[in-house]
Every structure is written in structure tokens, then in C-alpha cells.
Amino acid sequence: MVTVVDRGRWTCAPDGDPARAPVTAMRARELGRTPIVVGDRVGLVGDLTGAVDTLARIVRVEERATVLRRTADDTDPFERIVVANAEQLVIVTAVADPTPRTGFVDRCLVAAYAGGLAPLLCLTKADLADPAPFAAHYADLDLPVLVTRQDGDGRVEGQDELAAALTGRVSALIGHSGVGKSTLVNALLPDAGRAVGTVSGVGKGRHTTTAAIALPLPGDTPGWVVDTPGVRSFGLAHVTPDDVIAAFGDLAAAIEECPRGCGHLGPPTDPECALDGLVERGELRPARLAALRRVLVALRDPGY
Image (tube, rainbow, N blue to C red):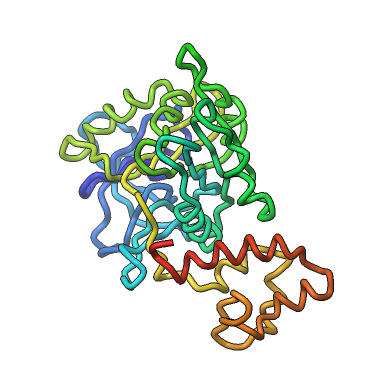
């Protein structure tokens, strides 16, 4: 499993086991410019001891189970793969300071649904404001919501619940600057700073804060946290409305009856959307469809 990418060098955890010495590798010439990102499962040959100054070669990239992608903006056809094979996307949003925005969360949800990741919303700074009003926006999407707050001693309350949600999974964390994501990472992974410092010696000696890095959960707890400090927003040029709907098992079949090019927003934009028929027949709650359509608006409006 690739844990760090640093300018022509890849740090890999053998068998995804953080207890084993990480292996530094380069890309084999026959792979050409095949993209290799954090989370990728790769095949290695050469020196696999992880000893200092040793170097293996990546000769194979396994098929990805999930992919978190973004584009520079909604008109950019070039996709950038942020993380591969993450099972969960943890969207970190403060309920105050800074003021939360549904638009950023909605665009992250679109990227998660389209890429096959299970989204989880983590609301921080609940000691400053009531998280319930913001969480209510997502109640009808059945989106899991966890709440954290700092107590008077600076400890993070709610981190145990978050740690439990991360256990046994590869989870990518994303959030705007200032929402408390670094505080969460440091609380969950006390050695995160030291781990980043260690991998910064890989390759040419510097870990850039704009790159993703996979860090293991502490102790014997299975699971990985992929910190993505450089991702501030998602361009969604690579996503279609059908990609989003496909993530909802109870709705995916219905849209086969929609006309070609349907955006599933309903009247007047999409007057023949089959999802409205589900509501009329009592097979879909109106509030659930309204919540889903609000997320779909993020595909049409980059400033949403």
C-alpha cells in the first residue's frame, strides 16, 4: 500500500502492515507515466527490507476499488486522483469559526458518491455552537454524523466515537483550513507529526503539505487515516448526475426510465425525471429526494 508520494519516490507499507519497515520504491520504466497515488496497492520487486538507502521498483498497480478524484475546476477535463482505495471519506466541518457551508460538504458528497467512498460528516467546535441545525441538512440522506468539541482542558470530546468509525478501514479526511482537522489528526494519531517528519526524509528530503499522506491508527488498532491537507475544494467536471444517483441502491434502477441527459433536478429543469414518480407512488420520501437534489445542484453550480 502506497502511503506517501514524494517527487519520484513512493513509500509503501508491505501488505498494508504499519508494523513492518516501510519500503521506498521508484516506478519501473515499463509503467511509463502510470499514475500511482496514496492508497494504491502495488507490486514490488527488488530490495524489500526497508533498510536505509535501499530502493525497490513498482512493477504493477492493482485495480482500484474506489477513487477520490477532483479537477481544478468544473471546466477542466483533466482528473487528479487524490486517494485510491479509501473506503470512507470523512468530511470535517466546523459548526462555527469558520461558519459552515453546505456547498463545500455537498461537493465532497458528490465526489464520495461518484468514487465509491462511504461519506461521514464530522462536525467540530460544537463547544462554540449547536451542531443540530447544520446536521439537519443531511438527515434525509442517511449520512452518518459525528460531533466533536474541545473541553476546558483542550481535550477533544468525541474522538473515541470517531476512532471507532475509522477502525478497520482506510479513511480519507478532508476539510477547509481552520475547521480543526489538524486537531483531530493530532488527537487520533499522537505520533502524526513524528511520522510526517520520518517520511520527509524519503526521496529528496521534503514532505510537501499539499500531498496526501496515509498514517496508521495507533497501537494495535487496524486502520489507516489519509490526511489530505492540500485539497480545498472539488472540481467535478468528471462527474455526471447518474454517477451520484448510482450510489443510492434504492434509486439507481429508477433513473433507467429517465430521458437521456436528465439531471434529476425535477421540474422545471428536468420535468420527466423518474424520481418524481417514486414520490408520487409513495416509494420515496419527498424530503429525501429534496436533500439529494440539493446535493446535485453542486454539480451545476461551482459557486454553490
